Image (tube, rainbow, N blue to C red):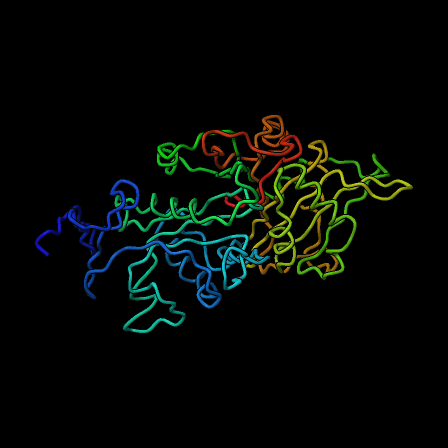
Length: 402
């Protein structure tokens, strides 16, 4: 190995590259000759698209182990499953007809883990060969793709792994609808840590997202919505783990239609999958008339089983109904089987991520006492405008899912 050149030390790894390797496509772009040496020997670092059902089944645990070493250490197994389990459709570009998930993970591993390992043992598997980095790609149809949860283990940073992950995710896309279709690449939320990297590869900020939180008890004191002011308004909450009958209701169809109008994306696969999670409820506000109920505002409410915070999003519709919607959230009886959720924790906090809408941010902060947790940018490749009716898209579903 006389031609191997030492390019960095990051215990317990020694990072090497072979400058004479014939299979180097572009050192700056992929760096396929980057080597990692461990106690098991020297092997190449590779990026893999995870599609095998058995491997996906155990992936949440492995990604939770990765995130526990990063700035996203709060992401446990349930949070990863929330993202990974939104699935549907068939990937027709694959001869094996592998079921295509709306959320596709890409991971960077040492070459020993390129075969599926579902049960770790002392010689091989998760414990011996941890995931060094990951990124999730979200497919919204054939031409719109979002990316998020870009994580690289601190011990493997500085070696170009983030670039390799993003390159693989952006290049390995399903076949487009037509040759002249324009592909849109979206980052629903970009942290300040990641911003310089994304700017280098051509992403530009196109919107502002603001995460806001408020204590439930404080919010109860501040909200003063007269329930009798609008007799034609109906507020309803569909309980966690909803049956298929609720999916066929006119209001759920309107919910999906409103989300598509607001975002310009077909997110029905993801929303329908999340709708059935045990810790997710659906809140709708509709106007009643002789012709039937018309949806004016809606949101999903996500409270993970061990969390005291409910996440309100996506938040859709007319911003003037947001106080009424929040009132319904804080006044719901968690023990009521018709409206209660299945979280093990008492609800203490409400959180939402406002998409632009500076007036709504101001109202929530000044009138309702919401605190600003962060204010970050949404980005697209080459600064392409975000699709949809953004005036109707009030709050994000999730920082990664948009």
